[in-house]
Image (cartoon, rainbow, N blue to C red; front, side, top):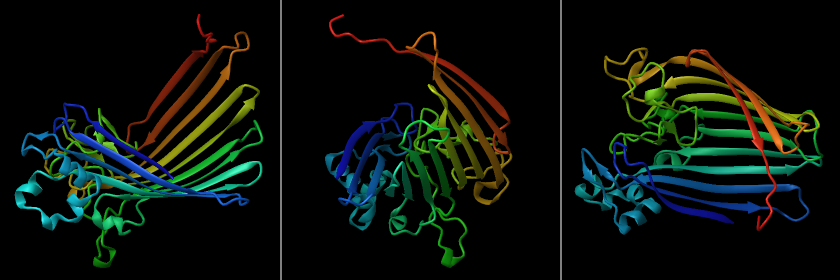
Length: 323
């Protein structure tokens, strides 16, 4: 069993100033003796709470409120709260169930995993069963080779609490956002916390650059990666990501937004391809000096076509205590 509990603070210049951050996880690992299989099961929970809203004033940040946020009683038992208490107790929760299965194949280790994402109470009971992350990977354990590791991941965030039995294509969730209070959503200094495929509004193509929160969260994507060795001391890594992007719920409903013409702020499908190739090695003339070089390419309908290059050097010295 492994657990983690943290209390943090987000930057001051958010829509809600001095927002508090609650994080925790709890994992269980089962490794039967004599069996080459390892099972993991865990739950992860994050919450924004407290702080001072420019519209609602100071939000509740008492110890009792922390207990309610930590144990989700602020959303599970809302009928016990007065209207005034509810106005001061609207934390922004996200969570995930995380399961994995590892197998020792003799010379290779395999891992398959599945994460279920949650934005509200209904999703805790698997209403959003298709939203989340699938992944599978192999890693060689017998030393360097041309192919040492393979990875495939599939990310889907389209259902967002939709009730298929009622004919809903999209639900009412606005993933990674929070309209009532924490309008900055799950972003920090211009980046989305956790998943780069979910983009902040002001960097999402077609949206105004002064919008808060998330601008693209209805996403389907596939990601693949390969790494290995080309020669002794020379390794490589290849990444490729294909994504289909549909905007976000109700993020662009006024006439000033351009390029987003679908209902409820949802765009037409925009496909995107992203690639990165990287090599790493050591210079033969200086064993302590290593280098890395990479090239990245974005092409498609979501971002403009662009290319990035990176070249780096790292020198590793010898540490001698007392000198």
